[in-house]
Amino acid sequence: DVKVTQSSRYLVKRTGEKVFLECVQDMDHENMFWYRQDPGLGLRLIYFSYDVKMKEKGDIPEGYSVSREKKERFSLILESASTNQTSMYLCASSSPGQGGFQPQHFGDGTRLSIL
Amino acid sequence: LAKTTQPISMDSYEGQEVNITCSHNNIATNDYITWYQQFPSQGPRFIIQGYKTKVTNEVASLFIPADRKSSTLSLPRVSLSDTAVYYCLVGLYSGAGSYQLTFGKGTKLSVIP
Image (cartoon, rainbow over all chains, first blue to last red; front, top):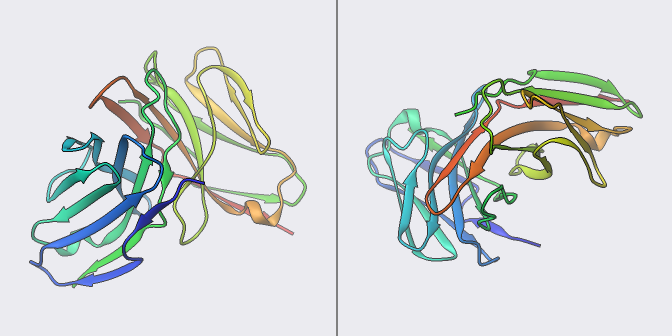
């Protein structure tokens, strides 16, 4: 089974801190994604990466950056955390499946609280 | 990007068939439709995917009419363990760096004994 592991289930940080969320997948997938999930808003794509060192903005990239130095690891960075970034963050991975959509495999999320 | 609309919630009794519809009026020609299931404190899990007509697997069926402006996830004979949030995703991967996808806001299904 595909395993996507997020480093923390719960995280509490303070406003202005630099926050790192880590994600590791074990299936050699090319594509990796970061979403945030908020009540009533569903899942919204922050960034995705289709190869090492390659990244593309999603729908809500403001206030975030990402890093992908190794194929299996995709990091989400909150440069200066703010209270409106309190949310559930989900990481996912998939193989490319050009012309269609390969299923995305999700981690169990990191619930981040910014105080 | 396609905009997706789903009912916020649905209730069903155990043993019944449940149909959850997702509207995606401006779906693009090459978009695929995917459904995910999410339990509390877990990430979404893939259920089924289709492009047109009907797709069936061991857990669900997906019906897509000819105009593709909506899709219906069908869960046969639901049990209490099917209580979850179900998300519709419309999107396409067309090559390196080219992902376009839109998740619906999710439908909370409650199965009643």
